[in-house]
Length: 425
Image 1 (cartoon, one colour):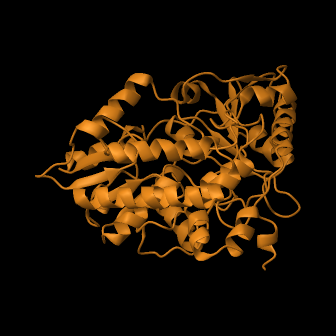
Image 2 (spheres, rainbow, N blue to C red; image 1 turned 90 degrees about the horizontal axis):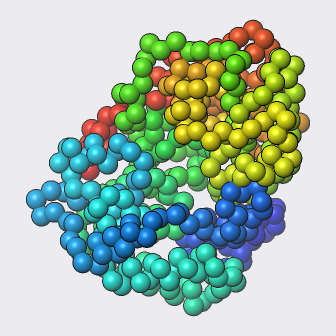
Image 3 (tube, rainbow, N blue to C red; image 1 turned 90 degrees about the vertical axis):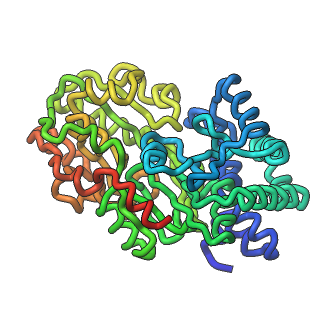
């Protein structure tokens, strides 16, 4: 048995399992991880299992009726199954003449597909994933439920003769079911990246036929991690067209926005990375000390949506930090400087014309404060993006008014080109 498997429960269970159970663990790896790692008051919704999105009752009833009683598939257009929830991508493909339909387990818009059997099975499985014990989820009865759901979905999707599948991740159980089904039909599946990755690995987001990213530098990072160059595509992002390219980057100390680090609620691969949540507080205290040294009296605090702002304030107090309650766009428009770790908000900040200073303290092991490798461009490898790895370096960036170069945006975010996806259909 390998050393890594002695340090990670799912790796140990997978290595000691028969083939059927091993496949079951692989399918449910993310959801099983939530039972192990998604706990504690530092999470905004610490349920210890699947984070359930709050969907209004009217929308739930509409989705149920749509899946059970309406047919959204077109006889004249190519049908695509889309699990994509973020704006722009679906509309661009619809404008190109495709008919996009979402599945009942990942609904968006009015075209929600399924049938009575799938709806019933989905709710049963979803309830177990949220409420049942880990041992039940590993047991034969649930294995049979999962296998039955897979067969049900595969039969339904084959019947509808779908051209392709679009997904926002390949790690969720439902994503893996879709990807496996489309592969069996010799139809392509696309994972559309929805940010600047904080983790690159040859096993991560590598189970679809194609991985679609925002910019060439992101593609190069994936290639260095070992992904096949033929499967990593650069399609850009629809929001690129709304960015004012000649906007001056503002930088003063009148309204500083601080982004804390976040904790992962799962393992990305079978090699465990265990972080110390106390280091989230360490990060904020170190930023506070640097900002106070620069003469700043107060700063807004904007945690990742998965993290609890109130939990953070219980440790750092309210004498310096106060929670940012604005929308993201309003918050960035108001900010005069953003200080934060590895985050897609680097690009969002540039797009809103506000300076972003990357602060990623490095441990003696060469990792970030949560135990992860620091990835480009947050590792200081891009001269256009100011990065501080020590408190002194962060203070120097502020003191010398070092500004991010707007040219960085072009490397990591390109205009959306729908033909990149169309050419693979």
